Structures are given as structure tokens and as C-alpha cells.
Length: 191
Image (cartoon, rainbow, N blue to C red; front, side):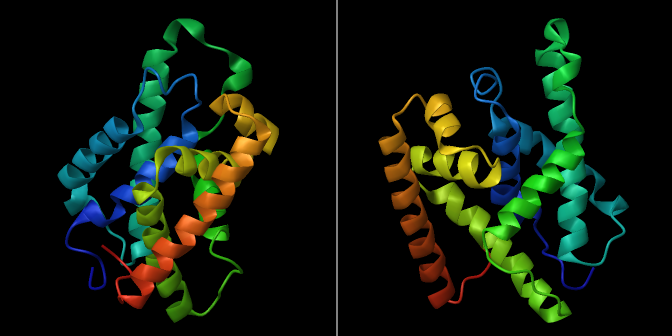
């Protein structure tokens, strides 16, 4: 594990983004994404010696898998009596899809090994920047760009007008670019 971070904490913002995208707005009142991420980090620290990967990409996938299990357990416990077979889906597949959508926010896919490594660090930086944003802007961006909800559905879930959501998205993307540009100019790709 030569190029891996000594501390798994650099992945916390990334996991927070993924966890928030998987919790429906109705569940956010009962479940806190940060609690599930905290549990994921605890499990990862306890099982760190069993990780056999050699790259940050493999470590991120391993952490997503742990997060997936923790989300599944939390959802099962909270929805035990309200089970709806139409709602069941593979959480791991959803987390991977959310990770891909988060990656897509960065632009075109790159293929060279060095470019993928830089992209992975930039992905972590993007997650950190999202974590630093005002809550409503971050929620609008995550719902629209990461969960791929139409603006009308984002407005419905956030209980805001279409115009208000459009403003949140506009200001949120502006703030996101500013945060990313600031971190890149300070040569701070990972926390």
C-alpha cells in the first residue's frame, strides 16, 4: 500500500456525499448520513489490515462496499415494518452509480494511469468541497446532479419553488467551482 493515505479520514467527505445521495428525504429525518459514515469509518479502521488493494481507487471501492452494508442495515432497521418490494435495489450498485455521477461532475473520462490517479484525488477534493458548501446548495446539487432528479422533483423534495432551486443550483455550482479553484491554486488536492 505505497500510494495510499495513512489516514482513512481523507475519504470521509466522499463517503458523506455518497451516503446523503442514498438517503431519501423522508428517511433523513430518522437517519443521519454522517452517523452511517462514522460507523463505516469505524468498521474500516477495525478491518484495515484485511484490505489487500494497492490503489486509492481500490480503497475507495472497499470503503463504498462497507458503506453499502451499513446503509443496508440502517435502512432495514428503520423500514422493517414498512418493507416495500418495489423499493428494493442493490445499494452497492446505487453507491457505485453515485460515485460515477460524482466523477462525471468533473468532466470527460481520462484513461492514462497518471490521469486517473489525479482524477481520484480531484474526486476526493470535490467531495470535500461539497461538504464545505451551504447545506441547501449542497442538497440541490446532490439531488439534481448526483441523484439525477429533475429540477421539479428537487423543488418538491426541498419544498422550494423552481426558481429558488434554480438559484441554489446556480450559486452552488459557482461556489463549488470557487472552492475547487482555491484548493487547486493552493496545491491542495487532498485534505
